[in-house]
Length: 115
Length: 113
Image (cartoon, rainbow over all chains, first blue to last red; front, top):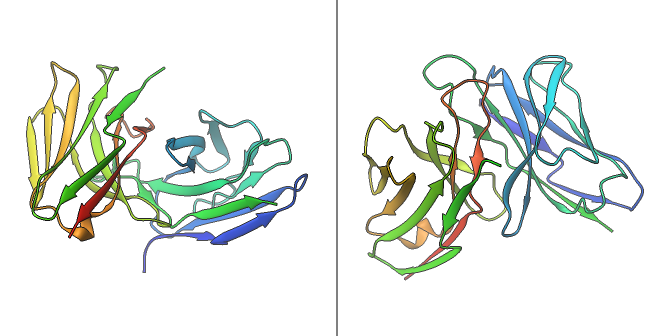
C-alpha cells in the first residue's frame, strides 16, 4: 500500500527529554511537511523540505529540529527547548510535479504527551 | 501575515440538512483552495479543491462555492449524514509546487441523527 506512516502513534515524554517522531512515505513525493495541531488552533507548520538535505522553517520552528537524509524519510525531533510540546503532530507529503502537485497527503499522526 | 479565516467554529446540523462552512482569505495571490476532512485521532484527508477560474465545483454531496471579488469560499454539504461528523479545514496556497498551505482553524461539524 502506498502512503505515509508515522510512528509511534502515542508518545510520552518526560520534561527535559528530546524525542524523535518518525515519518516515512512511499509515494515518491518530493516535499514533506510537519504540522502541529492543538485544539481550536488548526494546523501550524513546523518545518518543511522540498529536496533531500534541505529544509525550511515554518511558522513555529522554535524548539524543533528535522533532517532529510532520504527522500522517503523526514523525522522530527522535539527538543527540551520546546516549552509546550504536548500536541498532535502530523506529517504530510506532496509531489512537486505532475497533475497532483498541489495535493498534500497526511499521515495518521503522533500524539505526544509530556508528563 | 497571510491568513485564512474560517467560520463557524462549530456547527450542528440535522440529518438530511445542508451544512455550510465559510472561509475568507487576504492574499489575492492565492489560487488553490482545498478542503480537508478530519475524523478524531486521524490525519486530515483531502476532500475537494478549487481554483479561482471557476465559481463552483461539485463532487457528490460536497460543493465548493468561490467568490473571487469577495475573497471568500465555502463548503456546502448536501443531505448531511451522521458519517459526515468531523472537523473540516479550509486552506489556501499559491499555485506553485514550492508554496505551503495556510489553514483555517477548523469547523467541528456534528450531524444529528
